[in-house]
Image 1 (tube, one colour):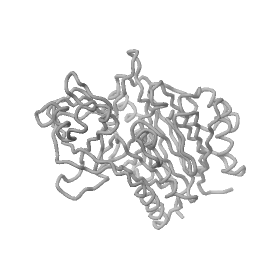
Image 2 (cartoon, rainbow, N blue to C red):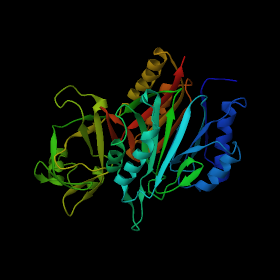
Image 3 (cartoon, one colour):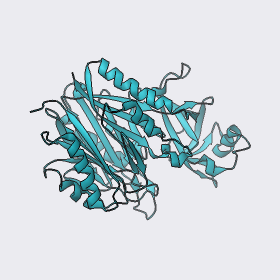
Length: 410
């Protein structure tokens, strides 16, 4: 029996949900090999597909006791595939001998994000090892709140703060605030044998794995520091004592002043969690993206709140895609040089970085896939926000990608 971890991926774009789930799972199983047992199936699909039917299709291919874990996504990414806003299904099958997996979920998170984080942290904490060096937590939560009949985004900051109170700072964590399409229709989460909504789900891996992460930000600061002087939830009302829209208009200049459509999903604030006056360190920044403007109050609506007193810089996006290929290849080389064998890559990417949404002719995710080459099977997803530690602090990131590389000791 093969004692080494292995992984294989499969993607489908069939419009029938059952067939798509079965096709993606079958392709992954064929690549994994009939002699290896699948211990876990990571599952992602767009909200155009009925999740129950996708599940039935996957179950028609796999053994009934294989746990499923994942969520809706706006699209999926493979070694030679990038697709979104369609009928994409992505399945990764992981053969993980000797690895212990524990599943957690909490349902009913809308308007109760802090409580949800506290509950999840309370559930997870007792299951951690005395040393968390061999532990890794993968975490997704539903971004969509429609309890009031319209879309409201479930906020990550209070949820992550609730979790962080119970989790050691050395625990490696990655994940996403999930979406199924750009209209933010209701989403679904898979957790073990359960199919859930309005939920936060977590999977704890313990023992036998090495996990390596790289945040691919794609932004650099382009302004001095500014301070939030008045805020209302995710709406920044005043910056440096002035109405936010007025100050931002002055900074962006006459060509963009008042063109509020250009602000949405383009204007990005960066919060530096490292030294304020040192050299730029990409891994110390967490970005906050503008998703709308409040013209009546002169405010900037962010995807995630900044508090009064928070300092930020305006960020400039770097459209040189070669950086993603180079950073990805460097991570693989670093893992191999450390004496590990990489066997699976999970890429959690901001949906706003898809070429069609920010006006590029090139897909950034394709450069990440090029960096991996054929060395490591890849499954990537487009989501509404990514999680990682930023200088030791668990943070939500906007307009970023989090690359997670799984390996085992050579």
